[in-house]
Amino acid sequence: MTAPSTAPAPSSRGGRWIEQWDPEDETFWNETGEKVAKRNLLFSVLSEHIGFSIWTMWSVLVLFMGPEYGLTPADKFLLTSMVTLVGAVVRVPYTFAIAIFGGRNWTIVSAALLLIPTVAAFTVMEPGTSFNTFLLVGLLAGIGGGNFASSMTNINAFFPLRKKGWALGLNAGGGNIGVPVIQLAALAIIGASGGPRVLLGIYIPFIVVAAVLAALFMDNIASVKNDTGAAKDAAKDAHTWIMSFLYIGTFGSFIGYSFAFGQVLTNQFGRTPLEAAYVTFIGPLLGSLIRPLGGWLADKHGGAKITLYNYVGMAVATGVLIAASMEKSLALFTVAFVVLFVLTGLGNGSTFKMIPGIFQAKALAKGLEGEEAAAYGRRLSGASMGLIGAVGALGGVGINLAFRQSFLSYGSGTGAFVTFLAFYGVCFVVTWAVYLRRPAGRVPATTASSEAKPQLSYAEV
Image 1 (tube, rainbow, N blue to C red):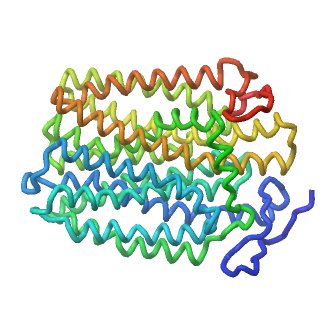
Image 2: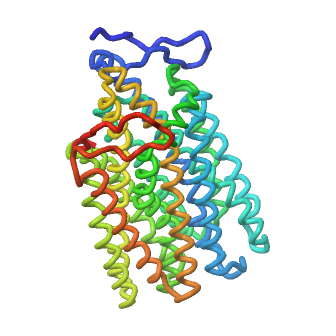
Image 3: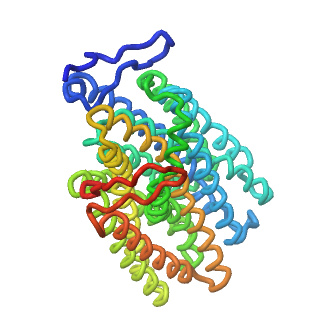
C-alpha cells in the first residue's frame, strides 16, 4: 500500500490538525507516523502525569492534617472516596471531549483546569476550615482523574493495533506514576518541616508548563470526529461492561489503594505521617513502572492470559495481607501490599490491551479487512475506553468506603481485605469464562441488536 502522506498535513481550520492518519499502513508509520505518534505520546504522558498527581494529592494532604484539623479517620476516608468518585465520573465526558475539541486542544484545556483545584486547596488548607469546605475543594481535585480518559482515547488513535499494548501501557503508566511522585514530594516536604501549602505551590508552575508544551508540540487528528453513534454502540456492547468490571479489579484497586495505603498504616499500625510517607510511595511507584510491561506481555502472550494469572497473584497477595493484619505484622503487611500494587499495575496494562483487540476481533468477524477493520476497532475501542476507565475508577471509591466501614466496625482493614479477596476470585472466573474457556466462543449478546452473533477467537486478545 502506498503511504497516504509523507507528512501530516495541517488543515484550514488552523492549529495543529492532521488531515490524513493511517498508522496501520507500515510505510506511513515508518516514514512519518511513528515519530509524530511518539511526540504526542510524550506530552500526553506529561499532562496526564500531573493530572494524576492533582487527583491523588488528597491521599497525602490528609496525612498532613493532624488533630488540629478536627477530622476523624472516617472523615478522611469519606473525603478521599468522594475525590475518587468525581475522578471516575468526569472520565466519561473527558473521553468524548477529544472528538469535539481535538486531542491537542483538549490536552491544553484539561491541563489548565488543574489550576482550579490546586489554587483552591492552597487557599483553604489550614486548621479551622470546616470539613464541608475541605470536601468541596477535594471534589474539585477529581477533575485530575479525567485526564487519563482523554489521554488514553487520544493516544489510542495515534498507534497501530500491534503497538497499542505498549503505547497505552506507557501512556497510562506515565500518568499513574504521578501518584508516587506527589507522595515523594510530600515526603521531602514533611522531612523538611514544610507544610501542605508548600506542596501545592510547587505544582502550580508545573501545570502551566504542561499546558504550554501541549500547545507547542501536540497535534489533533481530524478523522477523530464527534461520533455519538460510537458512544451508543460501545455502551450497547456487552464487552464494554465486562471489561469495565475487570478494570475495577485492576485500576480500581490501584487508585483505591493509592488513596488508602497511608491511612491504613497510620490508623491500623500507628505509624506517624512521616513514617507512613516513607513507604506509601513505593507501591504506586512500582505499580506505575510495571504497567507498560503488562501491556508488552499482553502484546506478546495475549491480554486475557496475563490478566487471568494476574488475578491469581492478586488473590494470593490479598490473602497474605489478611494474615498479616491478623498477626499485626507490619513488615509482612507492607511487603504484601507493595506486591499487590505491582500486580494491579501489571493488570492495568494487560486489561487495556484487551480492549482494542476485542473490537478488532469483532471487526474481522463482520468480514471487514485492512483499514476498514482497523477504523472500526479504533472507533469502538476509543469510545469504550472512557466508559471502562470511569467504571474502573469507581473501584477506588468502593475500596475507600470498604476501608471506612471496616475501621468503623472492626478497628482495622481486615474486613475490607476479605471483601477484596472474594472480588478478585470473581474477576478470575469472569476472565476465564468469557475470554479463555473456549478460544473460539461466542460474543455475549449485545443489547438492542438483531445481528447474528459471530464466532470470535480471543486467542490474541
